[in-house]
Length: 236
Image 1: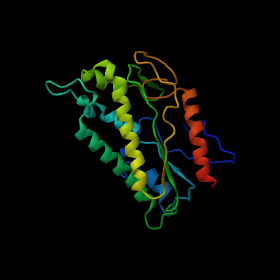
Image 2: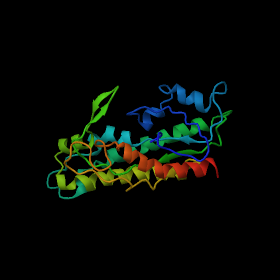
Image 3: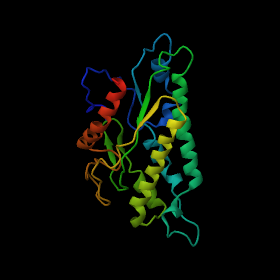
Image 4: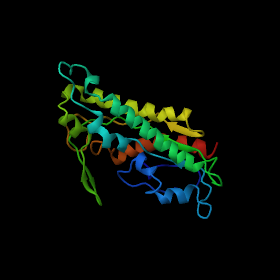
């Protein structure tokens, strides 16, 4: 999403992200020394105008097999019969703890970025389908949702509504952080931006390159929404 972002003034973007990263892994300070150095190390960090985090989507993908389940005997007619609500609550807690850990890093004594806003975004709705992602350096990965839906024998007519339920839950998990973390902003109007992929398509479909990643055009659409939101925070 970073490459198509546009600003009226010259703006430097310093990127620490890599494909497949999760917000839980980002918040593991033992594994993320660059984040510590750039935000609060008194001998290295600079004063940033904004910290943009993109996290939660991969966390949901990693837990899809646990969050989804086979229903008990006699159940299975309702969408929520296939959700393990205990695991979903644990996922919510872990994602919120991870964001909060990064925010605490910002607030450390002596940090130059105590007043720097943290911004994140909501994810658009993917379609569970057998469309793997191909990375130049990581090979082939996924699919994620499709694999979990098939493993738990979830009826296909429920796939889209159930996937949307999980992503709405993730959205509310992230939005709720505005009440927990000071100077925390959520770009939420990214939902229903992309043309949805068709359920049984295995390649590029709509604005989606694979099951969970948009096409170049799709990222341009999302960046067209994110850019002005970031601009208003950078240049109020």
